[in-house]
Length: 517
Image (cartoon, rainbow, N blue to C red):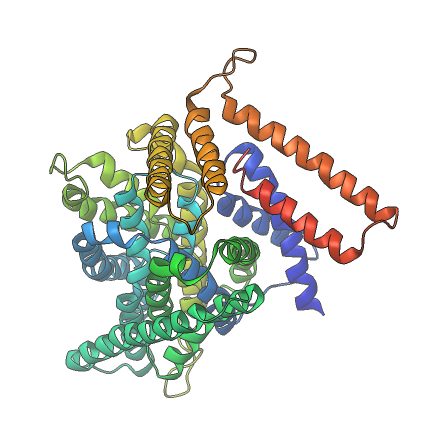
């Protein structure tokens, strides 16, 4: 019951924090971390200990799957070279740099220092996606940051396993074995993810029930993860590959009603999981600090030095690679390198990896430095999430890379017009055929012409508002009146509950089709 109560409390806390974040126009993850930290510092708050299996099995699969579904394969093809360089080269360089700095500044043995280096080497896809969701970055830049965080798992996971093996056994490692294990983890995980995507796509094409579609979508990431982990391959890679492939063809697998329902359900699931997991990061730190042994009082400065090392190394690597993301100029850009660096935060995945470090070595003796590694990992995660998360929007704005709202509005208007013209062309092609009544064609044509004219027509009585905006508001007002009348008829026992529910659903779908307010 205590665990259930803790989760419910975190959900309530996250709801309040998310409300404040929207009002203050700041990303929610840093505020959730700070809120969790504040709660943990309150007198009487019990220590929170989360099993790494809980994070790996329950939390990560749906969050990674949702991030992968949003990834644009078209833009990924344009930036795959820098993504590969970052997912391999930068992870290796970060592991070595953090290991060297940790060995020089902390009392950790060299082997355990490099364990910490592998834990913090890769950016976190959950944090990166959550922070980047509200930023108006160009497509290639957003895909670069997101794809790097999704695909660097295999590299960091292999390095982590090697480092733990060396630290626990104090033995040499065969690099041939390391290479084979990497191929097995990444290649095997990718293959399982692709198979799961093919099977799920075949099932969803034959399913028309919205409830079954929703259940299938929810269990897909867990299926890919469990199958891959059971085969001793990378479950995270399997989830990412399945998400990317299914996200590309998702619009072909279901109709509009099912897609709307899936979007709504997944939005709730992602909100709940992100809320709990970012709050846990803040809740964990005070309890870890209390468990530190004597002689580790300099951990705050050590954590700052490690975080600074990660940021500086990332800038150096990103500067030459930024040319590949700017096809128009082809020259490196410090501004682009700075934005991509600042967007690459650490998050829940390093914490899960640190928690999975064994308690003892192979000879049964306690593994030295594990509490300090957990504390430094959590401190670096908190530092990057809070500092980089709260200032990322300002960095993007100052860089000049952010897309202006007018640019997005013009693109939407231009694209909407092209869609309407495509519809009108189709109506012209079928006009005169006996299969479709002329009255139906005329009705659809009038509706399309009205939509084509509304965005550009201004309302003379209310300057600054287009006729489309006024139309939407008026239509919502009419729908509200109709909903009230439907409820009155039901309360007066003039319609059945079945009729009320069906008509209310029709009104809800019509209102949803009006778009944003």
